[in-house]
Length: 230
Picture 1 (cartoon, rainbow, N blue to C red):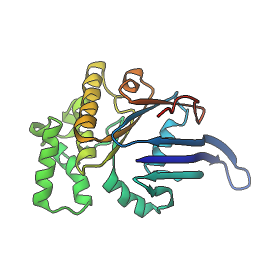
Picture 2 (cartoon, helix red, strand yellow; picture 1 turned 90 degrees about the vertical axis):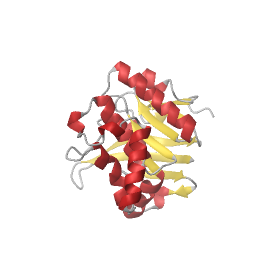
Picture 3 (tube, rainbow, N blue to C red; picture 1 turned 180 degrees about the vertical axis):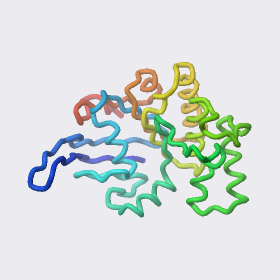
Protein backbone atom coordinates (compact mmCIF):
# COMPACT_ATOMS: atom_id res chain seq x y z
CA UNK A 1 0.00 0.00 0.00
CA UNK A 2 2.80 2.43 0.96
CA UNK A 3 6.36 1.64 -0.10
CA UNK A 4 9.23 3.93 0.91
CA UNK A 5 12.71 3.43 -0.52
CA UNK A 6 15.92 5.24 0.51
CA UNK A 7 14.05 8.40 1.49
CA UNK A 8 16.24 11.28 2.66
CA UNK A 9 15.53 14.91 3.35
CA UNK A 10 17.48 17.96 4.41
CA UNK A 11 16.76 21.64 4.89
CA UNK A 12 19.00 24.44 3.65
CA UNK A 13 19.33 27.58 5.75
CA UNK A 14 21.02 30.84 4.88
CA UNK A 15 21.58 32.81 1.70
CA UNK A 16 22.97 31.61 -1.59
CA UNK A 17 26.69 30.99 -1.27
CA UNK A 18 26.44 30.73 2.52
CA UNK A 19 23.99 27.90 3.09
CA UNK A 20 23.95 25.41 5.93
CA UNK A 21 22.51 21.96 5.24
CA UNK A 22 20.55 20.36 8.07
CA UNK A 23 19.79 16.64 7.53
CA UNK A 24 16.42 15.46 8.83
CA UNK A 25 15.87 11.97 7.36
CA UNK A 26 18.52 9.44 6.33
CA UNK A 27 17.79 6.65 3.80
CA UNK A 28 14.45 5.59 5.28
CA UNK A 29 12.97 2.42 3.77
CA UNK A 30 9.79 0.71 4.95
CA UNK A 31 6.54 -0.86 3.79
CA UNK A 32 3.05 -0.29 5.18
CA UNK A 33 0.48 -2.88 4.23
CA UNK A 34 -3.22 -2.69 3.54
CA UNK A 35 -5.48 -2.65 6.64
CA UNK A 36 -2.58 -2.09 9.03
CA UNK A 37 -2.37 0.43 11.83
CA UNK A 38 1.27 1.50 11.93
CA UNK A 39 2.47 3.94 14.57
CA UNK A 40 5.73 5.85 14.17
CA UNK A 41 7.30 7.06 17.38
CA UNK A 42 10.19 9.34 18.17
CA UNK A 43 11.17 12.39 20.15
CA UNK A 44 10.51 15.92 18.95
CA UNK A 45 12.90 16.65 16.09
CA UNK A 46 13.45 13.00 15.24
CA UNK A 47 12.02 13.43 11.72
CA UNK A 48 8.71 11.64 12.13
CA UNK A 49 6.50 14.58 11.09
CA UNK A 50 8.81 15.30 8.14
CA UNK A 51 8.34 11.69 7.05
CA UNK A 52 4.55 12.07 7.20
CA UNK A 53 4.70 15.30 5.19
CA UNK A 54 6.83 13.62 2.54
CA UNK A 55 4.42 10.70 2.24
CA UNK A 56 1.48 13.10 2.05
CA UNK A 57 3.14 15.16 -0.66
CA UNK A 58 3.32 18.41 1.30
CA UNK A 59 7.10 18.36 0.87
CA UNK A 60 9.35 16.94 -1.84
CA UNK A 61 12.16 14.64 -0.63
CA UNK A 62 15.79 15.48 -1.24
CA UNK A 63 16.18 11.94 -2.56
CA UNK A 64 14.40 8.61 -2.52
CA UNK A 65 11.04 7.28 -3.60
CA UNK A 66 7.50 6.82 -2.28
CA UNK A 67 4.89 4.57 -3.87
CA UNK A 68 1.25 4.64 -2.77
CA UNK A 69 -1.07 2.01 -4.24
CA UNK A 70 1.72 1.12 -6.69
CA UNK A 71 2.00 4.69 -8.00
CA UNK A 72 5.30 6.51 -7.55
CA UNK A 73 4.00 9.73 -6.06
CA UNK A 74 7.44 11.32 -5.76
CA UNK A 75 7.32 11.78 -9.55
CA UNK A 76 4.06 13.76 -9.41
CA UNK A 77 3.99 17.53 -9.74
CA UNK A 78 2.20 19.58 -7.09
CA UNK A 79 -1.15 19.74 -8.91
CA UNK A 80 -1.20 16.03 -9.72
CA UNK A 81 -0.28 15.11 -6.14
CA UNK A 82 -3.08 17.32 -4.82
CA UNK A 83 -5.52 15.43 -7.02
CA UNK A 84 -4.04 12.10 -5.92
CA UNK A 85 -4.39 13.08 -2.24
CA UNK A 86 -8.03 13.97 -2.71
CA UNK A 87 -8.77 10.47 -4.01
CA UNK A 88 -6.48 8.30 -1.89
CA UNK A 89 -5.47 9.90 1.43
CA UNK A 90 -7.30 11.38 4.41
CA UNK A 91 -5.55 13.48 7.06
CA UNK A 92 -6.05 13.96 10.80
CA UNK A 93 -4.10 16.73 12.54
CA UNK A 94 -3.28 17.48 16.17
CA UNK A 95 -4.86 20.93 16.04
CA UNK A 96 -7.85 19.69 13.96
CA UNK A 97 -7.35 22.34 11.20
CA UNK A 98 -11.07 22.96 10.92
CA UNK A 99 -12.18 26.18 9.23
CA UNK A 100 -13.63 28.28 12.08
CA UNK A 101 -16.10 30.16 9.89
CA UNK A 102 -17.67 26.90 8.70
CA UNK A 103 -20.07 24.61 10.55
CA UNK A 104 -19.23 20.97 11.23
CA UNK A 105 -21.35 20.06 8.20
CA UNK A 106 -19.55 22.53 5.94
CA UNK A 107 -16.10 21.39 7.10
CA UNK A 108 -16.95 17.78 6.29
CA UNK A 109 -18.60 18.69 2.99
CA UNK A 110 -15.60 20.66 1.69
CA UNK A 111 -13.64 17.73 0.14
CA UNK A 112 -16.80 16.70 -1.73
CA UNK A 113 -17.08 20.22 -3.18
CA UNK A 114 -13.42 20.12 -4.24
CA UNK A 115 -14.07 16.81 -5.96
CA UNK A 116 -17.02 18.28 -7.86
CA UNK A 117 -19.78 16.08 -6.42
CA UNK A 118 -23.28 17.46 -6.95
CA UNK A 119 -25.19 19.09 -4.09
CA UNK A 120 -27.76 16.33 -3.53
CA UNK A 121 -25.12 13.60 -3.34
CA UNK A 122 -22.92 15.82 -1.16
CA UNK A 123 -25.72 16.22 1.36
CA UNK A 124 -26.31 12.47 1.52
CA UNK A 125 -22.63 11.61 1.98
CA UNK A 126 -21.96 14.42 4.48
CA UNK A 127 -24.87 13.46 6.71
CA UNK A 128 -23.95 9.77 6.57
CA UNK A 129 -20.36 10.57 7.52
CA UNK A 130 -21.33 12.84 10.42
CA UNK A 131 -23.66 10.12 11.64
CA UNK A 132 -20.82 7.60 11.48
CA UNK A 133 -18.73 9.71 13.86
CA UNK A 134 -21.72 10.40 16.12
CA UNK A 135 -22.05 14.11 15.36
CA UNK A 136 -25.06 14.42 13.06
CA UNK A 137 -26.94 16.30 15.78
CA UNK A 138 -24.09 18.85 15.89
CA UNK A 139 -23.97 19.54 12.15
CA UNK A 140 -24.88 23.24 12.54
CA UNK A 141 -22.28 23.87 15.27
CA UNK A 142 -19.12 25.83 14.56
CA UNK A 143 -15.75 24.49 15.80
CA UNK A 144 -15.73 26.98 18.70
CA UNK A 145 -19.00 25.46 19.90
CA UNK A 146 -17.58 21.93 20.05
CA UNK A 147 -15.34 20.18 22.59
CA UNK A 148 -11.84 19.07 21.61
CA UNK A 149 -13.00 15.50 21.15
CA UNK A 150 -15.92 16.60 19.00
CA UNK A 151 -13.67 18.78 16.87
CA UNK A 152 -11.35 15.86 16.29
CA UNK A 153 -14.31 13.69 15.28
CA UNK A 154 -15.29 16.36 12.73
CA UNK A 155 -11.70 16.21 11.50
CA UNK A 156 -11.99 12.42 11.20
CA UNK A 157 -15.30 12.77 9.36
CA UNK A 158 -13.64 15.14 6.90
CA UNK A 159 -10.84 12.59 6.44
CA UNK A 160 -13.39 9.81 5.86
CA UNK A 161 -15.86 11.58 3.60
CA UNK A 162 -14.23 10.48 0.32
CA UNK A 163 -13.66 6.92 1.56
CA UNK A 164 -9.85 7.02 1.32
CA UNK A 165 -7.97 3.72 1.71
CA UNK A 166 -5.27 5.48 3.78
CA UNK A 167 -5.42 7.98 6.63
CA UNK A 168 -2.30 9.79 7.82
CA UNK A 169 -2.52 11.15 11.37
CA UNK A 170 -0.06 13.56 13.00
CA UNK A 171 -0.34 13.45 16.81
CA UNK A 172 -4.14 12.97 16.54
CA UNK A 173 -4.70 12.99 20.32
CA UNK A 174 -2.16 15.66 21.24
CA UNK A 175 -4.84 18.24 22.09
CA UNK A 176 -7.13 15.85 23.99
CA UNK A 177 -7.49 14.76 27.62
CA UNK A 178 -6.83 11.13 28.54
CA UNK A 179 -10.48 10.04 28.57
CA UNK A 180 -11.21 11.61 25.18
CA UNK A 181 -7.95 10.16 23.84
CA UNK A 182 -9.00 6.63 24.82
CA UNK A 183 -12.37 7.12 23.12
CA UNK A 184 -10.75 8.39 19.94
CA UNK A 185 -8.20 5.56 19.80
CA UNK A 186 -11.01 3.04 20.13
CA UNK A 187 -12.81 4.75 17.27
CA UNK A 188 -9.70 4.60 15.06
CA UNK A 189 -9.42 0.86 15.74
CA UNK A 190 -13.11 0.44 14.92
CA UNK A 191 -12.68 2.23 11.58
CA UNK A 192 -9.68 0.07 10.79
CA UNK A 193 -11.52 -3.15 11.56
CA UNK A 194 -14.88 -2.29 10.01
CA UNK A 195 -13.80 -0.29 6.95
CA UNK A 196 -10.32 -1.71 6.37
CA UNK A 197 -8.69 1.72 6.40
CA UNK A 198 -4.91 1.74 6.69
CA UNK A 199 -3.69 4.17 9.36
CA UNK A 200 -0.20 5.64 9.63
CA UNK A 201 0.00 7.53 12.92
CA UNK A 202 2.83 9.79 14.09
CA UNK A 203 3.04 10.05 17.87
CA UNK A 204 5.26 10.39 20.92
CA UNK A 205 2.47 9.03 23.17
CA UNK A 206 2.86 5.43 24.38
CA UNK A 207 -0.92 4.94 24.60
CA UNK A 208 -1.36 5.96 20.98
CA UNK A 209 1.60 3.84 19.86
CA UNK A 210 0.12 0.77 21.58
CA UNK A 211 -2.79 0.50 19.12
CA UNK A 212 -0.44 -0.14 16.21
CA UNK A 213 -0.06 -3.54 14.61
CA UNK A 214 3.54 -2.37 14.30
CA UNK A 215 5.46 0.34 16.09
CA UNK A 216 8.34 1.91 14.16
CA UNK A 217 10.88 4.07 15.95
CA UNK A 218 12.69 6.99 14.35
CA UNK A 219 15.75 8.41 16.06
CA UNK A 220 17.79 11.25 14.61
CA UNK A 221 16.19 10.76 11.21
CA UNK A 222 16.89 7.04 11.02
CA UNK A 223 14.64 4.00 11.40
CA UNK A 224 15.95 2.04 14.37
CA UNK A 225 17.07 -1.49 13.61
CA UNK A 226 14.48 -4.08 14.56
CA UNK A 227 11.56 -1.64 14.59
CA UNK A 228 10.25 -2.43 11.10
CA UNK A 229 9.56 -6.15 11.41
CA UNK A 230 6.72 -7.31 9.18
